[in-house]
Image (cartoon, rainbow, N blue to C red; front, side, top):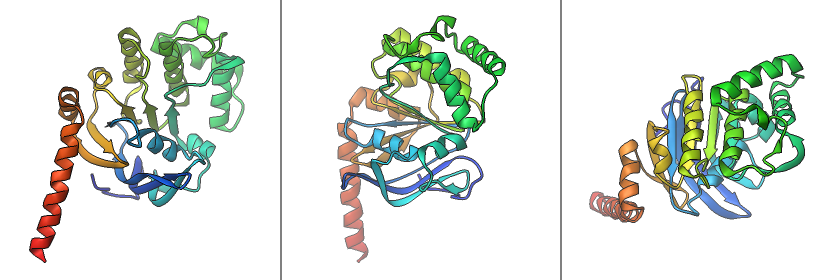
Length: 269
């Protein structure tokens, strides 16, 4: 997929991105644009660079951008710190949410909202917003006083992350393997929460190994990431093909296309 307008006022634009971790190249030329109102799914086997892409967009210092550009709402974000990116409207839901004993869910969410706003959040206003979002996402009031993710099931941890996303109202949300470790009932609940938040003001990058979550969160575009490159893009039908045939046919197809390209270059020469 080509970048149509790197200076677009809305959306996230990734152009020819290369990323290394401790000197080892992991992302090798990813180009992608995510506009408000769109859901993009990135699929790929283990070690293909999916989580590296997510952390790179959010500015984790371990992941070094060595080439290419990251633009968000018309601005180059490569020099922004992770907290600057979050304040501007980027959000990352982790594959393995952290447990924080001693910090309640309510206090964590209020601190998150304060950090994004850059100012204090009056307790009455916060409670009203929290109550509305919890009702919208069908999250029990009992969660507020519990320590963050302490003793939570996989599904409960992911629901709290979606609740955080609902409070922070990001413009681009990256969901890194949100379906990891969820049984089918938890998957349905979490997916329903994501769908309730989806709208024209938010774009979502959904990273996953499996097709099953895409039965509940319907993507507009599906991309296959292998060896740090997007080797194939399509729509929902592509995910269904991957479910049925795995990734081997993608490897063979991309290899054949590369060979054809080399032969075409020789012929032209």
